[in-house]
Amino acid sequence: MTDGQSFMAALAVLYGAETANVAGPDEVGFISGIGRRFRLVYPAGSIGRNPVGFVFGNPLPPLGSVFQAQNLPVSISPRGVLAFTAAATNPAGRAGDAGPYVRFSETASFDCDGRDVRAGRKRLVRCGTPEAAAKLARMLEGLRRAGEADREEMVRHALDASLDATAIRERVEEWRKAVRPVRIWANVLVVSVFAGWPAVAMTVGLFLTWPALVAALAACMVGTAVTFRRANHALYPAKTTERTQRQAQVSVVPMSAMRAHDYLARPLLAGFHPLAVAKVLLVEADFTALAGRVVRDLAMPVGPVLPGESAEVREAEESFRAAHRAAVGDFLGREGHDPAAFMAPPAARDASSRSYCPRCHAQFVTEGGKCADCGGMTLKPMKGE
Image 1 (cartoon, rainbow, N blue to C red):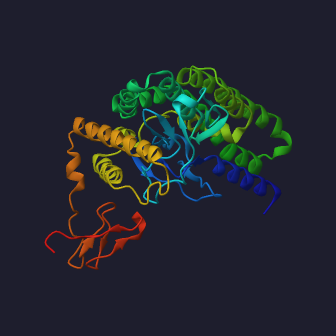
Image 2: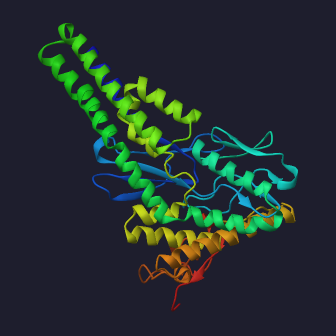
């Protein structure tokens, strides 16, 4: 392999790394290939004790988009907030152990530092994006300042807002309009680097043409940076450190500039429920499959849930899960689905199916036992058995 080929291979690897979007195990990704049809994906891979994975976008900038969504990573009661949720949108299971529980009456303030939400000086929980952390911190600070009698209604209102499919649809359309000029410049940059440079090198040579190639690269970078700045300010009007960092990276790193639209998409749906995002982006069959998983998970979370914790901590989790379940049920009702229908037994896969897991609907050839993937959930006999 020549030096030029090695250089282009290195650029391709760096570009490939830019398609990887970091995601926590409790996040989900929505990936599109060609056109506007999306599919649901879960983070791949894990690192360390608190695993993080990656959601990979389409490597061709004009042909795809990637959005991420996350359940609220806390459980809230009128008295306090717990850094834990029993909800597990990802079939692989729940993310991590329970974090701290703090009472509203004993906390001076809630704020955020990057992706971390802090209760006073203590880190409460880490969110998927800084924007999600900021939104959660504002909600918790509002709850802290409110009276205890008002908090239950405020929590329910926040859950309903996270399930607002109309707001999500409007946000996605706003993003599509804002990123059109960004995509054009990013695609010109991709073609210039991965097609133009090799073609010139093989036909004319780089010795005489490198000044023109560098000038063309600079022009593409400027075009991408200018259009990105406009879209960045339009989609995220609040002047934050994260917005400035996105702008700086896209302005000076060519590989990041090629994926500029992804930088604008990652935090776009912060604070929205994955199920509501699925309603907007997925086809009906995929949405229905996710809805069933969410409904059953909220009714029958992976056990054990908070073993050994105090009654106050367990009450926070249970009351919040009940509110979450009610909000999801109301959302599904508005969308024309009966939540109770998702609790019905599945149709037998074949004649050998004798039992099923009521939570994940996996089917077994044995007549009894437990589902290891669902924390030892007791199997139920198939209908007619």
